[in-house]
Image 1 (tube, one colour):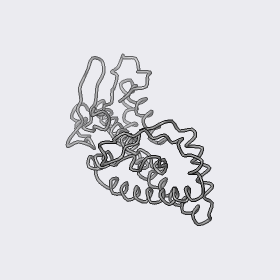
Image 2 (cartoon, rainbow, N blue to C red):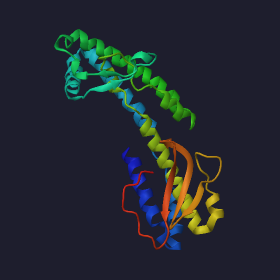
Image 3 (tube, one colour):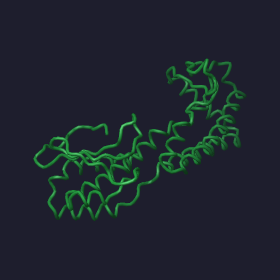
Image 4 (spheres, rainbow, N blue to C red):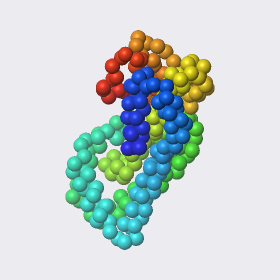
Length: 251
């Protein structure tokens, strides 16, 4: 996530100042962007993190150190606020308030936590299979599969789901940054060779080039990618003579 955050900031910084760069700098920037290595797939971190959870839980079972699981999650239960729990195939109780602090003392014995460890392993293994299948698909099928994956699949007062993250925002962030990097390349091509050069850079999430519009004193590049609030991903380029934008944009 840090790697993608750095790319996001770099894309915004270059976009804000692109129209001010002389031709020789644009030529150098185009060469650098063409050699830019692909970032680490978000799926690598998600899968490895889940594998780490499974290995940790299995080690607790082998060594009989269930108390470590109990100690960690007792603290989480004490600190966690009331949170809604979505139970699939149960429309009558679609949003049961899950009070994690309700893990009462009588449920904190070794048998209870042993059950939780075993259940958590099954949950993580199930998650591992589903996430690998979804991430192996191409966009947009992969993103549709991720959004259909229930975040909470467990029964009331169950804590195993705490090991399963909501990964859809992270994958959406990856798609967004990759699209904006390609849009930056298209913008550099535009300032170097005009609209024909711009159209030669293809939208990785569309069937052709990006959309280019001039709105006031800025250029707005738009991708076919839609991963947030059903809005297309865009990159804004202030034209020469326009102050650079010093704010945290939402696109």
